[in-house]
Image 1 (tube, rainbow, N blue to C red):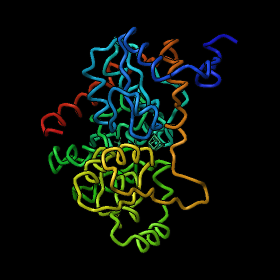
Image 2 (image 1 turned 30 degrees about the horizontal axis):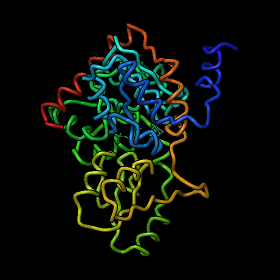
Image 3 (image 1 turned 60 degrees about the horizontal axis):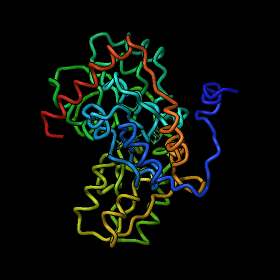
Image 4 (image 1 turned 180 degrees about the vertical axis):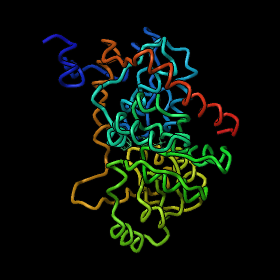
Length: 330
Ligand code: 13P
Ligand code: SF4
């Protein structure tokens, strides 16, 4: 089987790596040699966050992808994020350590069905959460992330009718915050939908001073209990700026690595899921490993390609989001 067939089948190409090799050193060398930059989301493994040139939330990562002067972007995140980087920097080589690192939320909104849905509301503007395929972005008017969704809706005239997709939880949160009547697509993230209200309540009883920090992809029952709601960057900033000692974190626990690094004296407790599974790790984000990242930079594969016609249509709503965010200082 050649390397391309192997990537198609498994998502990455397997190769023996000498276990005595210092992968941190090797990745640093390859980065310099190839003028590559590593962009990592907060949900990545601690090792990947530590080797990254930039760690951030979806908005920060898109802003970095748009302005980097590197020749190669290694995107340590999931497929829709790497696609967004390619759309914003089409002349650059964009690599994803495991091309099967997908997203349940993006999968919950197939573009051909969304197109039919959109046709039912011809006088509505379409705002899509960045967690969706490039094809879906191409069907949108403005893209948003969890850190600017409220402000983007607020930037539109009150009488403007809006479809919001694909995340129904973020959509409901934005509708509540802005008082707007949004038409929602019925999609959700598998990681943020499994937090248990009962178990969080018990945890709060055991840690009465602990503040609950929640991502707006969580269901309303969890958001109603939260002391703070925000994107991953928002959650990190809040925990750092607040005087409290204990925090319960209702988002993917990869973020706790940075929270703990920035706040060594504070205690961060992952919010428990409603099943007996060990954790709330995102199985898609966690497909990337340091080994796969090393091999992907070495072989410059798997590479993310987006058809030209999709790039032309999808770049507009993403740039619109970046413009509004820049105007608002986000
Ligand atoms: P943010 O990076 O905007 O906080 O979103 C979290 C997420 O689910 C990314 O997949
Ligand atoms: Fe998608 Fe949820 Fe994983 Fe984010 S945490 S990549 S929204 S499945």
